[in-house]
Length: 350
Image (cartoon, rainbow, N blue to C red):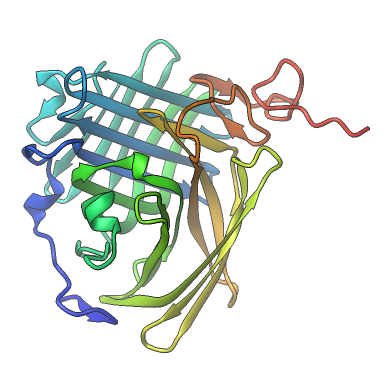
């Protein structure tokens, strides 16, 4: 069934080949990245994953990997920035630089494999698309020219298994994947918001707000996918609930006024600590959420935020409700509560 579009003309539709790794171009900071964020409401497991092949950068090509897995037994976090090897350019996807993670596409199945012997963590996750791929990012404005261009955002289900110290967990969740390629100049962004919600094959949304440091503007754009119809937003209002550390969040609220006259309002509540991830000094927090529409329908959600006015001049060692350190963080007792010897900043009431 063909996709229909309301609120924007001549929307580019992507082909299946566009989901695969692309050949790099000559532009500075040319990159090719694959991404997945998801949550399983029933089992309390989820993940945030990204592999980015960075070309035409000082010192030669790099590969940046974000592996984040949340389970009832604990949270696995690993962020690496390594030289890009020939063996990372997989026939069907992306390798991560040290063979602990890969993302591959097989006949419409987006398969993420994690195998980290040092921590005893492994996972096999399969994402399939709820709808066809299209260019949701605007060609108008400065986002495409100053920050990034090609970007496929698709919602869908995630199935598989996760094994961590403490047990093996089945997965049956929902979330959103993306594939982006071309120039990607993250230093242009002074701050941003990226918010999603997925409620099943008939309803999902994706929204962005980007503070552009070149043009000193804030550009917002968003869309809702209802069945096979994409309705673009005419107004985007994103409110994030930030902790005292000004980085980690408790979720947020989004209101989308749509081109068909309808409105979507959604409350996003954090279901796990935020996960700090980094690309070449650019720090952002990824918070997995429960998404609740004003009509009571519940789905999965995600809130990503950054505040990079100083762009990497200083790096926090701990946050109030966000994980920075790599490794497996077991859950038990007060392990995920702020304390002097824990991974979070303790809060003292005086």
